[in-house]
Length: 640
Image 1: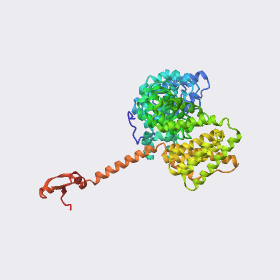
Image 2: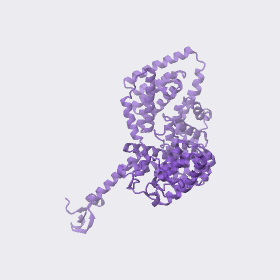
Image 3: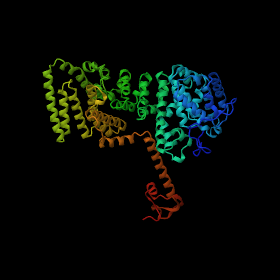
Image 4: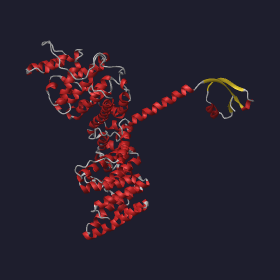
């Protein structure tokens, strides 16, 4: 997003004195007039009525005074707002109106903003508004009545920099989350939706280009101070910049979700098809695992008719939802719920069935959602089985539904009257087939081993979940060896669903299946899903070791650490931005080299049909290959 004016790269707020953002306690020398430097004396006033009167007067005068010590007072107010966001004292005395005027002054007067340490003012002002509007509806309503929305939008659309954009976005998100103050934000609906989509799509590139990719000496001093609270260190700055960029993306998605949840602006959001395709990739990262991120917005859109129709037409979104639904991501349930909403809608069900059915069948053993998934997939299967009135586009989908019907309906009916002795006999036959499959595996016959495991699964009773976990996991390993990543993911997911349901806790998932699925996702190029499975595998191994051996120090296996390192680099928040920057720099370097090596020279071009006499004599770009490609019958004088 283009900003209204650009800050100079060599601008520093510490030209005269270095500001460490830690306010010293000033000494008040005038009891009748309180300047910015004696704000802390006002706060320490012991008489309540006098204290409130002085604070109220101070908030009215502050926007009209040009004092270099404003930053000290704002820093103190920021700390109070952070520690006591529900305290109504300052909001009742006019702090919202004061902060709104300071923001408006910062946006309107560039010369004033760049003077001394005024550059810090809009950041702290917006942060204070957001902190007080975070929890209490009454305080948020008071902020709206104090006309804070319009100044916040000025920062939100990028009038200064991405740092101020972040805190303005945070404040607007809190205001939009309350029912009483949502309409005040929704008055600027089109502008906010457009800007939020733009921020969510480009904020990572913006932060990388404007801060992370710059040398330490080229970074704006005030941004470095705000990021690290006055501490120095390139590593700390980069880590905080990554965290703030992540928050920019997550908070912009949250603001969009506030509108979509109320079924507002759904059409505006769904018009951006490229944005919808990128939504599932906006996953929040490891720094913010609790944020629903892009999947939360997709789920909200799937609860609306317009959203379901738009998402069902985008194959990339459906595929991404399927990948997340079969992963160890905390947002797995959001993806499954979104897919179920698409399947329950008769207008979108048959648009997505061919992609979704083979994936959701692997999850029918989930303890919490397995029954719902089964009912949704088989809700109209009787039309296929008995009446043949439902024509599916894919034969694979039909076969998968038939297997699901056999697993959840026919086999349950067959095995329910079986005695314990019959169950043990079938289990023994399945174990014998499993052993045959193991022998074939060690001999290198992967296809034969997978066939033996499949027959063992058909015989193994449904009640013997532990044995079924091992069979699915072994078959997944066979698929891995032959390079069939999709089948490996399918079998590993089935094993994990069975193990979680059988053993009761998530920490007791089948470790080998986690690792095998991580390898399969790596083969498919899905770095995020592979990383989440690797982390779950480490957690699982650590928990199992801790239970078995008290005092034993767990070490991460080398092969797992190598995989984690690979996927961490691939899923780094700025990985795509860095790749684009390198590609652009390479192109620029190539163009510069061509410009330097290309010379102009007067050459003679002759034709074989003209007896070798010169056709023309003119200044042309010396590139013999291009001349020969343009007309092979021409030759350049001097060539053999």
